[in-house]
Image (cartoon, rainbow, N blue to C red):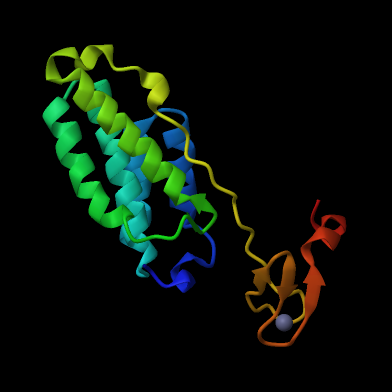
Length: 169
Ligand SMILES: [Zn+2]
């Protein structure tokens, strides 16, 4: 299991773009954005981006009728996706893994000959909560958030995120 620290913090902005495109069924474009996020990211979370990217490519192969390609890339994705907690950086990783597994099971049930009949409604959306990045208004440090309690590690400034709509909306 990955340290939960790898799951704190915000998603790379290109990863967010990738998730949005994935959810629109634009798997090629999703793959490109996630690849950029993967290249930019130096932390362990890059592996998660890589796994999601490979599932996007798997789905792309299915839409293009490439059975072997789909099975192969899905097999590779497992390694990148397996060790994450159920929710990481706001992404529901467990649900994502389960959805992809169901897709491959259905694909294998159909077999190569019938890939054209694959039911695309099985391509489920990725569910995630976009975490906000908090910057301290007193000292400019990045703040930590836990259960809606936001605190500054540098100067001790604190607030409750439910109070903040006044300032930010
Ligand atoms: Zn501060």
